[in-house]
Amino acid sequence: MMSPLSSIIVRKADGTEEHFVPEKLLQSMRRAGANDATALDVLREVEPSLRDGMTTSEIYKTAFARLRAHNRGAAVRYSMKRALLGLGPSGFPFEEFVAEMYRTAGVRATTNTFLQGACVEHEIDVLVEDGKTRTVIEAKFHNTLGFKSDLKVALYVAARVEDLQRSVHADEIPITGILLTNTKFTAKAIQYGTCARLGLISWDYPQEGNLHQLIERTGVFPVTALTTLSRREKTELMNRNIVLCKAVLTNEAVLHELGLKQKRIGDVFTEVNALCGLGGTV
Image (tube, rainbow, N blue to C red; front, side):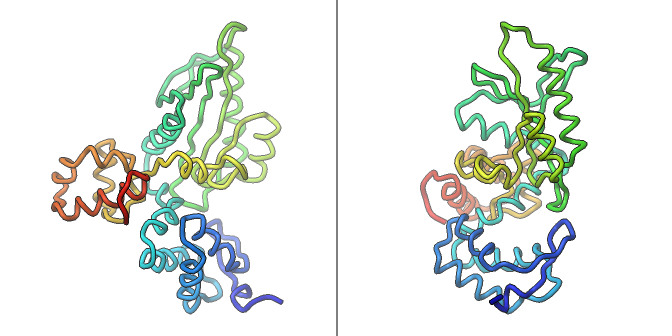
């Protein structure tokens, strides 16, 4: 029998509608580090505000506020998907963020590189080299959750990778390609990418090795995830090429320049240390 909560119709970021699934909300909070008791408490606190036609974004904002009151560290991780949206409007901070994940995993990663293909030269968002292969990553950044990378994008990236592969001689390191996005793929993009042997990584695709998991495994978090900084302050940091949470720790002078008092700087450092696993608590 369907529970009363499951009978509520909610609207997703792409405009489609679905039944509210309480377990999805519980699971997302558990993945963020909330224990079962906290997740259930937040669900109970969110329940009175639920109504037909409510957007998933509205539900997220309510759940985030309640979770933050219980467990700030879990709330920061719960907000990670939306924190990535704040890396705009240009895609440059996102490219740097992606490169840092691979560097943390122990491989060489550079941004804004150029490689010569069989036909033309290509600008590469992120080039990853492990000594055995060179992987060119097309980092497609979107600043709205409802925007998906579609078939046209997959076709375009696969064509670029093919041109680069045709330029490689037998004694050179082979080239592979990945299309990586902070949101989602359309079904046709996944179908074509799989057929064309193009690597695909989105927030929740594939089931193993998706962007969400890469962030958690590498412990690389964007500065936009911090709750102790205002939106303006985060933007100012990114304007100074400070994209990662951990980079804040070595830029205390910049925080002073932005007008933060010592107590607030201490709060920011505490949050960064807890989020990045560098000690301390939130």
